[in-house]
Image (tube, rainbow, N blue to C red; front, side, top):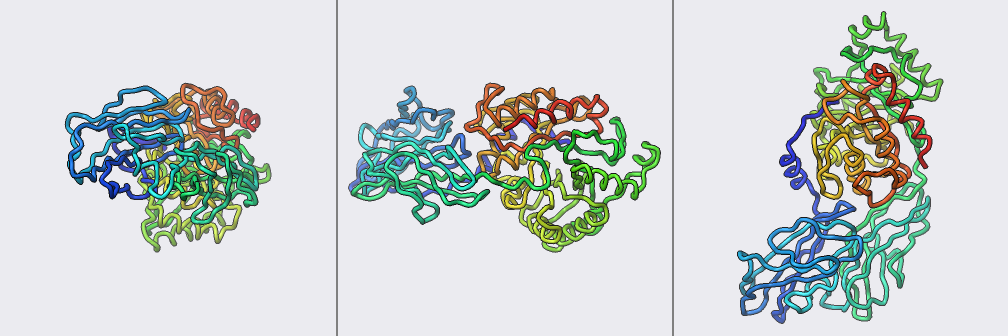
Amino acid sequence: MRSLVRSLAAVAALVAALLVPLAASPASPARADGTPTATFTKVSDWGSGWQGQFTLSNGSSQAVNGWKVAFDLPSGTTVGSYWDALLTSSPPHYTFTNRDYNASIPPGGTVTFGFLGSGSGAPSNCTLNGASCSGGTTPPGGGVGAPGTPTVSARTDTSLTLTWTAGTGTPTGYRVYEGTAVKATVTGTSATLSGLTACSTHTYTVKAYDANGESPASASVTGTTTGCATGPLPKHFLTGYWQDFVNSAKPLKLADVPSEYDLIAVAFGDATSKPGEVAFSLDPGLSKAVGGYTDAQFKADIAALHAKGRRVILSVGGQNGTVQVSDSSSAGNFATSMGNLISSYGFDGVDIDLENGVNPTYMEQALRSLRSAAGANLIITMAPQTIDMQSTGASYFQLALKIKDILTVVHTQYYNSGSMLGCDQKVYGQGSVDFMTALACIQLENGLRPDQVALGLPAGPGAAGGGIVSPSLVNGALDCLARGTNCGSFKPPHTYPDIRGAMTWSINWDVSDGNGFAKTVRPHLDTLP
């Protein structure tokens, strides 16, 4: 369960490489009449912030010597870092001017500059050297600009409510699109999409319109209705890893696991010589340490836990795990072997903790095959390292999104990782409420449902090399995400009442330290909405 500490520079470089570009229209060319234009594009968007770029195009026969781009941002949206320009004014009106090296735009040439935005809005009232940016926010065929990026401001089992900021001009109204289909037409800057299915996910864009036509589309927003089935687990639950090996933590039989743990992940199933195949057997050293422990006793303990409403899954991999699922054959071997282990031992599902990497295409194939054989109550969890969930471009994040319809929960390991980027693109140090909330926000704002996100922390000293937190801070982070209270300096853009819960490595370390993690966090889960 341990991960390598990465340097901040390496993390930042990897995040930049993995950020997924938004589907956006190509940059508009210079106008046919030769007027210089400035076109704005959101290069990437992570929900609570985005990377923006302006492309300045000179279609005239004369060079543009010196340029100034000015625009407004709505309340709640601000500019952070920027490059290839100088920022010379304060919010809400921003003015960017050229650097020495890009002051001249030759005939037919272009210049770009970029910046990071915090919040969901987008530039409006854009001017280039005092004239309309034209090719950016005002479409050639109409007089209205694109609305700001919509947000999901309310949701029920059957509806999603969207809110956005107005674009430039005086629109007659707005049309909400799902793909190419118009789902709502309104005159204000909000709309409720009704008649949806419980626990269904939808992606929308918004266009303004007037008598001359429609604006460009806003950036997209994705939302999921409430009513998601929680499966055979409580709405909020505590997961703990049970060690099938001996180290400095207290060795335990499954029967000795404290009652606070709703889900027990047996660590670990590992590879065989057959690609993708998973094997499990009780460790002889553990059996000796607990005074004897047979397969029959282990299976009986699983059955006894089931009788108490608790669930047991097999975690595959771990720090030293070598399971590889990289083609259809190994995917089949994984599904078959895991199915056999579930039948033999009575496991309720599988935890993917492959710290040597995952292939999202073939692991999806393996997990869907396993679920088809095991049934809808199969529990599927994931335990990625923090670096694995920094961007939707990372393979672990891709896998989570690919299996979103059958995934139970992702409990990211918020430890042994050093400082990392939060969803606001600020750096946070491990071992703090801000670290947990700002990193969880990346998943919550980029496709996973709140009921699929949990916080993974070490149980106490000895359990990890870094990121040890007081259990009360875990409760604070859960409050911040669920209610918007007890936050640190980072304030999530939304509240997530369905946040699933917490995980700890490990039950054995928790028991060694007096069971403080479980006794503190588990009762608090019952107080969440």
